[in-house]
Image 1 (cartoon, rainbow, N blue to C red):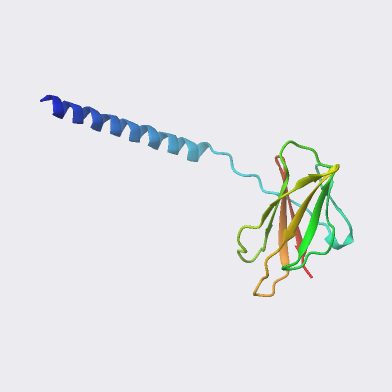
Image 2: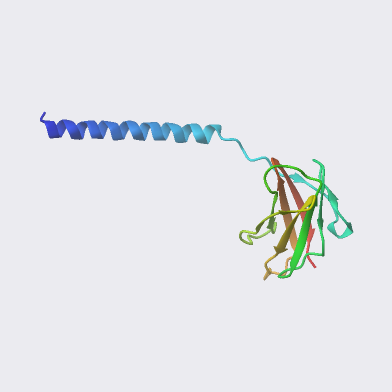
Amino acid sequence: MNRQQRKWLIIGVALIALAAVKAGLIYWYLHNKQSKPKPQALACAMGRGACALPGGGSLRFVSPPQHGQPFEVRLEGVTGGAAPTVDFAMPEMDMGFNRYTFVREGAGWKAQVILPMCVSGSRRWVAEVKVGEAAYSLPFNVR
């Protein structure tokens, strides 16, 4: 075996070893990853004031939500390092990416939200609020 053949043999063995390590890491990741916890469902009538969060604090819509119209969502009494987020989705159809990050205002947090129009006429939405490690799911209807 000459020098060039030996070089290609070493490269081939190294690539096979690298592929085996990569396959092992992918297998380990897929079998050991943490499953995302399901958000805790809240049963609040958002038209009647604030909704108390089980971990402390409250969530409220400053004005009634409407399709295509901006409205404000307030989060009070929650602490944490990272800014909370809220995702909006329709239970029966994909409405795209509708995630909003709260910004600090005084002692609380606020988010300016605009929900897209639904061509089917559905008015049912679900807000998923993430505060630190906690996640809450809140179904609501728009006007």
